[in-house]
Picture 1 (cartoon, rainbow, N blue to C red):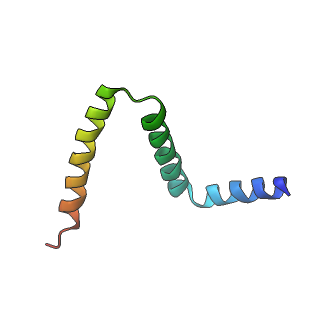
Picture 2: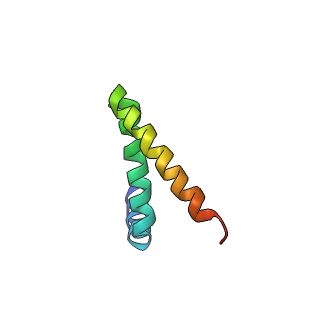
Picture 3: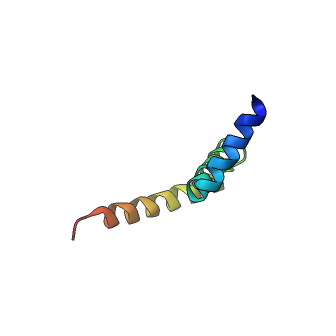
Length: 63
């Protein structure tokens, strides 16, 4: 059963490369923040998150 699941996972990842990459990056980001980020890292990440949030808000506005 585990072999079939592994094969199914590989097939899904091949079919959905961009989404699989997104999920992997998101998971690594969360892990870094939870387990390794220093105070300085968190301050920098807050700034980057604020900037990204503004970008998303501005791009979502109708023209």
